[in-house]
Image (tube, rainbow, N blue to C red):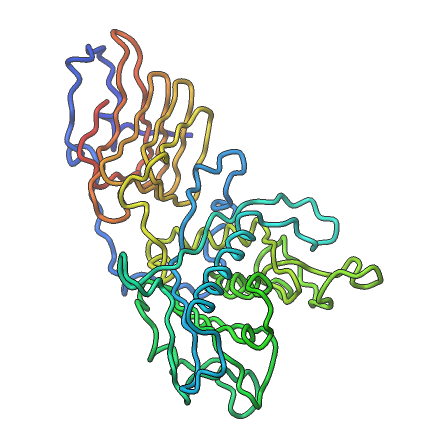
Length: 412
């Protein structure tokens, strides 16, 4: 590998300077500036998998390197003015909270996939959760809303009056639609009854059948997770969804049975139609993580930007040789220990007022595609490589094209 010293050559000092003589160098003197394209200049994604999912799969040995992201949700209960067709009041609020709670539990655990049959795929945490979000901090609405509309309340899945893909109810009743995913819990029309069903429509999801089933919220958690999976870029797994670890299988079984074909052909994939919908493959998780990490993606704005400012207990220490090929948004300081190497080949965001510390004997390698910055446009402290008295210090090596933005100082 060829490393150049031209772009960031001042990162590596040869003269042994005492610690007290260490000089802070303004970032602008040693880092190339770059222009950023506005949102309307960026290319549109035309396919579901638009980055290499392998670069975004959380490392099970280093889960802290992929901080959990939190997707903001509102829940809307639709009803007629008679108030006869859906949950109301505290019962509805409790159901909304329970639905989110049990959906989050499935995401925290992620179960072993049944398909491919007897596969050896690892079980990996998807590293995202849902958070019910009120209209303002401390607002009494709790993020749960009630609407009474004789025209728009009902969900109709099939037939000439089908409205599953119509947006009128969303446009009229959504709240914080540019930053919160709105979940509409709707009753089936009395003349068009059906079971649990959902559909993802841009910045909102319609779910129907909860009230009619009279079943507890946990039974419907798979519907929410399935539709959010669509929101985060996943297709149905029983078709060719672009992931090699989710082979097309036709979805022949609702659940596992002792008898063929459903003894071996049943699926529990979240993106299939089945009774459980509680498992995701590594490729599926990597696909969603890539969408969440894309600073130009539509979906990213719906997550709480905990990466802007430092969060408590989220500092990361690199103690081995680690390579980051996918974009990351860190929540705290980054430390590279003595003898450790961190190679960055993508975008890495540091929270405001945090820093990268390279211990003596540690090394930071910036590939040609590396970008260190704060994804919210805030300043961060920069890179510090403290020197042992008359001894060694940490090193930064950079390829042509590596970039650093918003760092206050570089101390090397």
